[in-house]
Length: 212
Image (tube, rainbow, N blue to C red; front, side, top):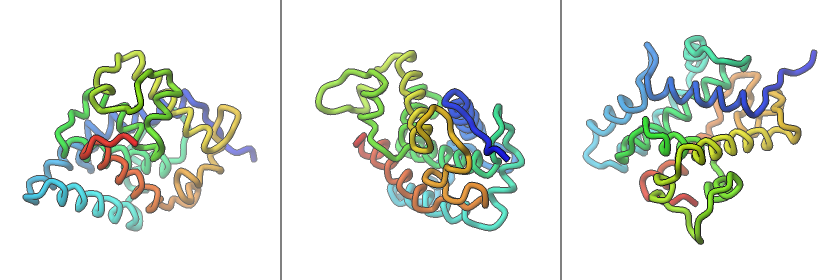
């Protein structure tokens, strides 16, 4: 049987859907703002609140049945394994919560783009340059906030392309080859190490303003 494949445009549809759910929430899952406020209310230290939230989110996602239960609530515009979509959703919600905890608005288009960039776990400057963003020696949060909407869309598309090229080389993703992005997609395992890298990236970006 031929393995399912999705292209760059479909990847972006999935990421957009996951982001929209992350900021609006599910019946059985808090949105990123609610999640952020829950931890901020429990700790006096902002940084401790963030780190505790990240640790708990990763631990929660490794528990038996958690991804499966959420996956059934996510309806996507393209055919994609529910567990893969759910991992993306959980990672995006976690990054969004980190952004909120450091004072960013998840409904802002530039924040959406930064969340997607963090999701790659790679060089933000390189992806932005590949998308055609012109800047000096250092890309800053202030500059990203000033990028017009049309250019933000191009950066988002570059993120989608990055996922494609990490899994294949012809503009499509073979879903059985996505282990580098999500460990054991077919079996439903949660990518612990990869999510930790993503979380650290988000903390550097939103907490310290370090894009690379």
